[in-house]
Image (tube, rainbow, N blue to C red; front, side):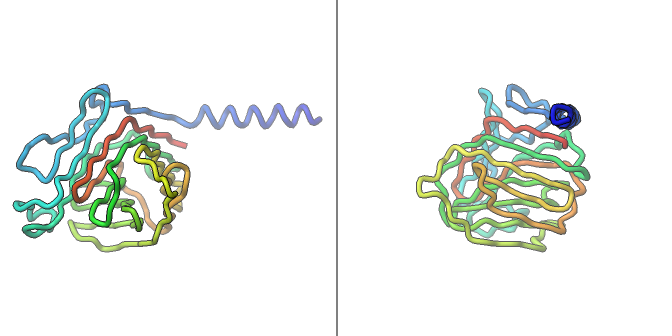
Length: 212
């Protein structure tokens, strides 16, 4: 009887594994249509080259774009996104391996999702002290959840980021540590991407989408 139970559990686990579908982007090309920009007049750059994607915001920009709400002399942000091969109405997991510059109060990075266009998206962003969940509608921040985060003493610049949606809760992890959890945030759009603010560089080695 015990053997039958073990066999049944193993079969159930195998069936669940088969039902989970994954797609891994390793940036050997641009199969998902990530937005790239190398223009020197922009607030930053996003370039796929040599198997990685590099996103860089230039910090204080005297010619900051009105579109991002920045004034002359303010820090600016930059992002790159694609439309992910997942159904956001169902549970999913997104895992990215990244490398970042050292964080500071004015040097931030993060992950954007539920992205429809530049003014409509969610984001988990963090610096060396805080993590924020941000909600933008029509280019206005209409909601924010903030909390302090205690990083390990020797926080790595090479990190694994993971976003998990179980259908009712969104959880964001850095190197296996849950840094924020939010509820009551319905998902409608498949756009996902990466965000930098201030003089910050973010290098993405790969990103894996798994539909549960």
